[in-house]
View 1 (spheres, helix red, strand yellow):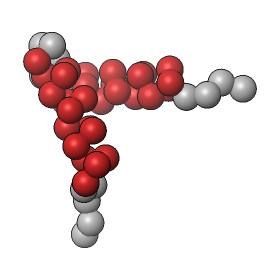
View 2 (tube, helix red, strand yellow):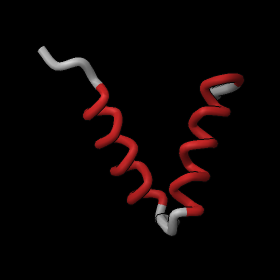
View 3 (cartoon, one colour):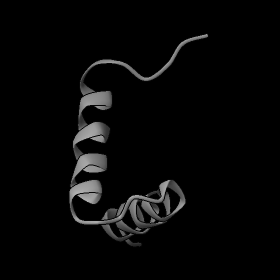
Length: 45
């Protein structure tokens, strides 16, 4: 079984920590917010 490692893991950990220090500690809430942010950054056609 392989997991996320290296640069990508560090970036996800940094984003996760930003949510945590901002007061969002529920993992489902964090995932919802991250999904929303990824969607907003995606190129629109």
